[in-house]
Image 1 (cartoon, rainbow, N blue to C red):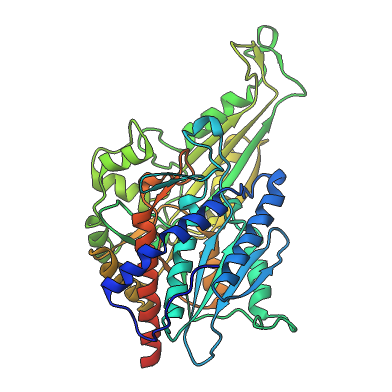
Image 2 (cartoon, rainbow, N blue to C red; image 1 turned 45 degrees about the vertical axis):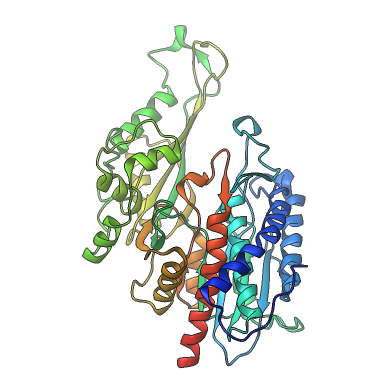
Length: 475
């Protein structure tokens, strides 16, 4: 159990709040260690028991803070749902996080990826920043707000399939939203707003509240030109080489040096940044040098900070993730391979539609290689929020009061499929309130989080819940 806190029915002063948050450090670190030590890798079938064990543990954390809890089944991994308060006269806010994590190769890590470790103020382990650490910060902020009597209902929605594209989230949330009889306290999942804590700041010196996410169009291109690999001495020059054709296809699709996409009509529906967005992004504190250091890049496509920042936030992409086939052993084997496969994805921006983009790309490919097989591997719409929304303004106040600087309103380069699903099914505004920093290593070796961001997150969410509660009382 988390230790009890005094019930005041009054929002704490900044000094009292920060003293209280500092006393929660041991609890935060202990719970984070328990979660990180479970390798909840949703993409690996052999980790199924670990993913389920992580969900059970998270449900226990919610019960510890007095929540009504349900482990909600889906066609895949379950979601963990918790509720603090159920007064229909009060506003309700829901917090989304995910507990599943990316795979990790121990040989690439300085510490064991699935064994929590601490070095000074920094916590290491897979899931520390994506997304177990931010989830716990939001939980402790909520618990503190409820303990202090904030007149608000707070719900938690913790997913276990985000890292594989949330394939069953819409089905599971749809069931929750309709509700099932006989589930005490769980008659239907409804909310006035949603906060997602799964995004990244521009830098540690400048908080960021993303108002947009890029969408996704993933695909594979498969090409078979024979029944078996054949000798290049007897067939070379005559046999079609699928790897050669697929490599040439990539060159036809995108300019390697600039990343400019050459597929006709690809940019037709791109919604340009508004003047207001351009100004906010320009003030976000983005640095090419810091960006390269955080991601351990030795070179990038653009020399100017502004160009590089726009490429990440506001421009679509075309990326090659793999070209497979042929001989992959030491040295060379002089064969013409029979098969090849190209793995591609495009990050999309508002107002690009992934179905439309897939159709254009597929037609472009088949015009060049008519016998190729082109398959979609995940389609996700881009997201754009409301810069003037009441919830976003409340989040901006909470960030400013906590971290001492107003947040930059930016667009994030990544994709979170659950965001669009929640906006559609719950019919509620979604605010992105992430805590991670570029140097925390999202999806990378040596992923980490730190107490400065964690403690700030607890305070930020506490302030946010009180702000929403006051706004609800004034309606």
